[in-house]
Image 1: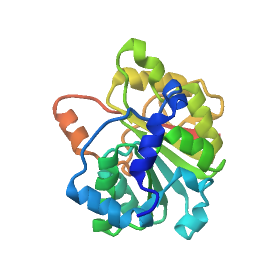
Image 2: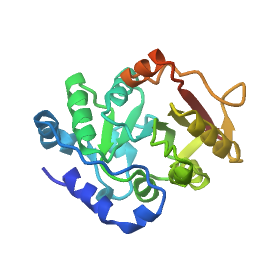
Image 3: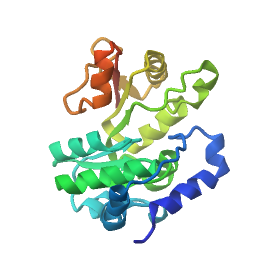
Length: 240
């Protein structure tokens, strides 16, 4: 297998400038199962994209001009695979630095026969800056990012004005930045940051949060949270 994602994960950890900047992830160690490793070994060349490729040509990568949806931090990838399977008229790209998640997503995608999906094992901010062309994304999804719940850590949250403007460069006019969190304080932070951006419009009729849209699958994590009385907040801001 070429361009192994393990190598790029190590490179991301070694680059000090990404430690100083707001990062799209918190580096986590995890052991690959045999199934996850087998999926990476067999299918990465088919599904994987790398930072080393440079600017992505979505038409060449997917063989069509369908809208491209980018998800940052897809975890184990079950909901991303489900979304791609349910919307064959769209192309999906997932970014995740946690290698077991990449392996699990590959395993599920191949089991389900999903073809309109590509995966990246790298820091999302670097990918956005170096590999994603301006006005080439129809939607960016950020579901349940690290809330950095302690007040002194709030500056580490990925949803900041600078990040919002980076996404605005990459979204088409009318494209949507869709966020979801189960931390109310982070939801309030997201709403404050995004409402201050002149080139975004809140899609919520009430000017705050949206009901969970049908295209975002209800995860086991959410179902458990609902049973425990925990809330989930969806925010959808359109680039104008």
